[in-house]
Image 1: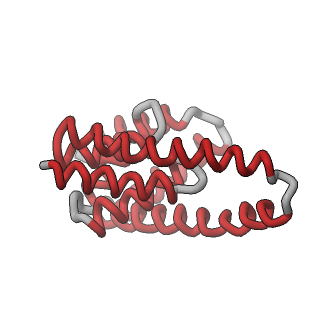
Image 2: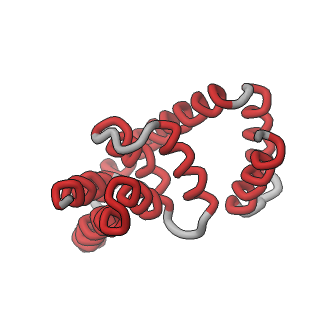
Length: 178
């Protein structure tokens, strides 16, 4: 049990330290740890947990760390996952904030920040691709595309809160996709 808790803490700590750009950019890293590295979840289980995580308030990365930890080792696992996600990144953020504010006018720091942004875009795109592929595998491409387009319109053009869009898709799925 202690080894499992340590593995959960270390896996989520890696994500917390390397998840540059916030929660959404950390989700693909959590997926790599939970699905690929440790085989704690299948891709489908991870996608389901992610969908539920987006339906609830709060930061997605800590919710996912808690869910992964809970699946592996119950409440102690959830605590280890959240602490692993938060503690190392909290320490790193405090240190980096002091460094960035001290060197904020440095061309090197500006270049580093601009250089990492494309990597974040690629990580997000890969996560979208994998999730969309699994969605098409389990639901018809027409329905999956329709839900995606309606969601895009609701978020981008109607400016509906993402929580309501997720809730609406959950209701639609419960009624129409049983």
